[in-house]
Amino acid sequence: AWYQRRVRASYEELLYLFEEAAYVFENLKTKDYIMVAIKKIEALSWKQQFIERYLENADRLSKQKLDMLIELAGTEVNSVVKTLTTQLSERLKVEGSSLPVSSKYLLDNLDLSLCFSSDTALFNQLFEILQGLPEDHIRWSLDLLFKSNKNCMSLAPFTVPAVSESSSTTVSRCNIIPNMYHDLDLNMTFDELLEWISVSEEVTSLLLAIEAVSTWSYQITHVSKTRAILPPKSDAEILSVKMTELIVRRGWSLLPSGLCQHSVRLFYSVSSGSFSSTRLKFTPFCSSPEEDCSFV
Image 1 (cartoon, rainbow, N blue to C red):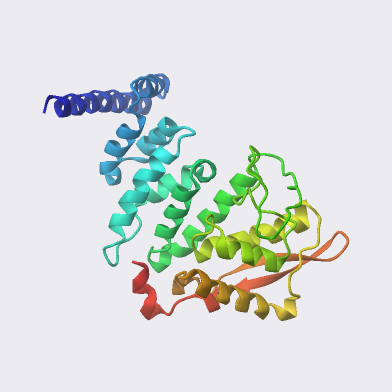
Image 2: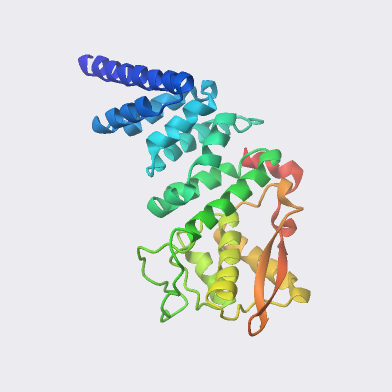
C-alpha cells in the first residue's frame, strides 16, 4: 500500500541520517550531527517507531550506536523498555536462551527509575520477565533492581508521608519520588506492611515484595529515624515464615535456585540513633534446580 511504502521510506531516510551521524561521530568525534538526527526524529514524532525498528537488529549494533539510541530516548526510557520487554518475553520462551549482550548493555545504562515513575506496570513486567533468565544472570537482574531503586531515592529529598488512617490505606501520590515504592506509608508496622504487600497492585512478584520490605526497613531506620518493628536477629526465621505465607496468598512463583545463597539486609533500631540488622535469606523462597525450567 502507498502508506506502507511511505512509512518504510521515512524510516529508511531517518536510518540513513542516524547512521551518518554515527559515522561522523566515530571519525570526527563531534556530536553535532547526532543532535541533528535526534531533533529530526523528534520533530517527526518518530521516536517510538524508530527505536522499535532500530532494535530489530540490536545484536549487530555497536556500543556507540546503543549509546546514541539511549541519547535519542532521553527521559522517555519507556520507548526502549517496551521494545526490550517484548523481545525478551519472546526470546525467553525458548529454553536455554540467554540475555543478549545488547539488551544487557541497554538495561545497565538506562535510568530505569524513570520507567518506574512513569509506568510502574511496565517496570514490573520487565523484572518479572528477567526472573526467567538463566541462573548465571539472576544475580545481575537483582543488582539491576536494587540500582533502579537507589536511583528512585535520589530523584528528590525524602519527606515522611502523613499518617494514614488505616493499614489498608496508603498516602496519596505526589511529585516527590523518594524510592521505588513512593506511596509507601512509613508509619506502618511490619505486619501492616506485609498486609499491604498482600493486596498492593504495585507488588506483582516475590522479588518486588522482598525489595518493598528492604526499602521500608531502611527508610524508617535511616531516614525517618523511627523504630522498625522487626524480629531480632535470633528470630529471623519469623520473617521467612511470614514471607512464605505471603507467597501462597498471592500465588507467586518461587525464585530461581541460583539465588538460594543470597540474602537481603533488613534494619531495625535497638536504641535511639543505634541500628542493627538481620539477614532475610532467599533459600526458603527458591525453587529446586529441577523446577527452574518453569522460569524459562
